[in-house]
Length: 188
Length: 325
Image (cartoon, rainbow over all chains, first blue to last red; front, side, top):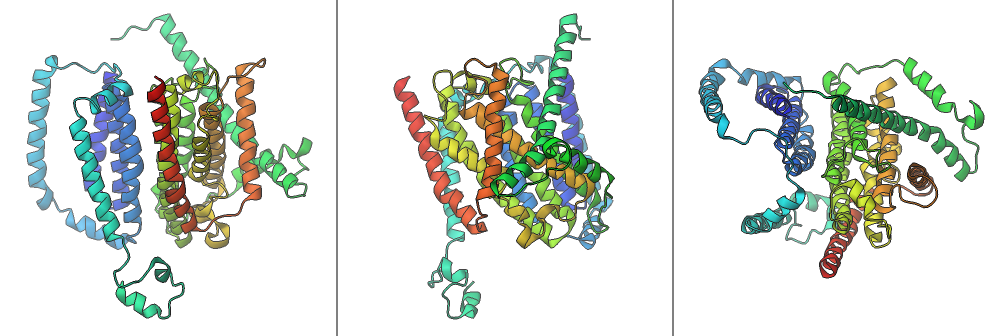
């Protein structure tokens, strides 16, 4: 289990680095998906099988699909890739990378020196029942707040996607029973 | 260092052999579906279907395989090569991985996961990438439109698929597929969970984009949709992937709603096979007898009819489970 954990962790690190260094956005997204799958394996190795599967279902399987969906629409070509490449000059990334490297070293040192106190990677499984009991027991307030937030986003999405106030209905937008299509075009 | 005992080695070997048998069995079944489908379509459409190669045309698939292996495997020069090659492998991989958690008999399952149902949903949601990346990497308008349709269709129908399964999980009190089968000893889930069964079957059909939900590859409008640019064995992988999907959904319907291996007299595996085979044939009957809906009809049907029914089903099942426990 420990070996699985560190191997998946390494893959997650490398693929995440490729996400930001890749000039082609779709390739970057592929790396991001791989990185999420690696994270899911890490969760599993830590015993959180439920979280691991949710990571795949929600992040890798649904949210990333929408990312890919949007990027697909952008009509990217060799020109875009070249432009992205031109933005990735060492002058721009050298400073932040060095700072992030120092932070990584600090974290590794903390982990290695304090590692003995942690539980270790055993793969002892936490069942979905326990997760549910916790979510609707001690953490019920957080769950309800998240529900508020999601409802708010739903309302906003419905508001943005609603019909125009000047009476252009759904049917009109599709071009059915409309006298002048030009009007529809203007109101949009 | 870890110590390996003889029992450990034997159990690893046993799992390995089981995995191999199930993988080969699933792929063979998927390949066999192709001549079966063509013969059954012929039967239902009052014509012969392929009946020349081998007994009753059953070796047609072998002839097709030989043909497809010898075809030129062409990658268009304008395609994104890496993604183009990876895409067809994803659908095979995710479909085959999903077979790992299916309990064929009480002892024949590769991974007895406690989150089995969720694992299945995860694999089916990863399968979307195959189609999306194929459509994008082809750099072809038909392929891109097909991929767009798939993305929207699969993300929407995944929601109803997941919700329809919650009722079954509530009744069994577990995400483990083996426990779900055992919980149906007295009564198959299809009776108390009939709406869930219908929704799951429709959503499953949409997930593997089979007719009548084959809008991503509607040949009249999109040539062949996302696999327009694919040829040779890469096309073959999409093709077999689709049939693997049929086998998978049929196995799932059997496990979740029709009591899996449970049944009188005959051994468990035979019952499982008979039930699953019935649904595979039903998929073919669906293709032979239904028309393809328009794209907005597909979306409206999902969000306005299936979603409310699924939610009401979960609420009622939950209330009954709480009241009786």
